[in-house]
Length: 290
Image (cartoon, rainbow, N blue to C red; front, side, top):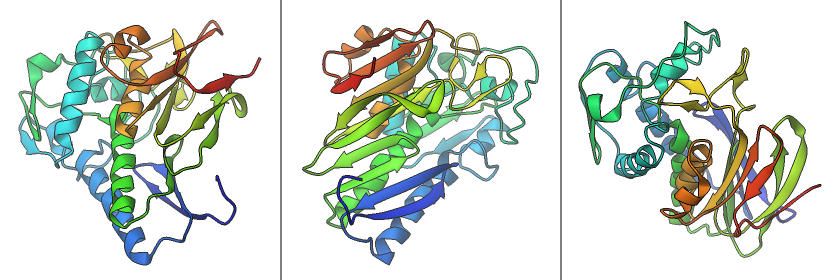
């Protein structure tokens, strides 16, 4: 943490570990509100719990009304679906389950990879309203954890807290006058770093093939057009003003040329490829170790 004496509030939510660091200890009321926001989000969007808002859509076609943030997700996923030619899609859940990454965490493939359904064929998503024409396993994980980081930050700001670090297992948002040095995890050895970046008043998110990997070459970053894990990129980092955008772009970097993304988003990036080389944007404020 950036200063000695900072207080940490740690908890588990949406299947990951959270650490919120602030100069002063958070009140019980603020802690309670943070936990409530995280639980509400999980109850709305989790594909891993049968009582979630979207879970019913996996059993039968129908309509649901999402929380207010659903409109932001729709706009972001819609743009990235278009830029990736269908590779990045919120309909990837069924493809993940086919390869064993389902609610039971069996991690045993059910068969050959299957492409995600085409958005335009089965899904009508307008703002907070979703209607499906077939049972669908929605998965907004590529941007959801980042959006939830932003929602927890809104709770802190509403309580008058302007200096903080929210760290949801590596998806980070920083607010305050002093920058934070963050190590970049080696994609093949989590005990090592390949570099360091200065995070100052913004978000940093990473995506890596080794984070949720199982079987022979199986991991959680799939090409929606084929249902197969992407093998050309092994790790990405994205820095943006919001964690939702940084989170989504860290996934999109597996599928879309960074220059194409730079035409539509204000962000900086670093990619590490399977052949060992790295590439990064001019604005990426980091240092790579040799």
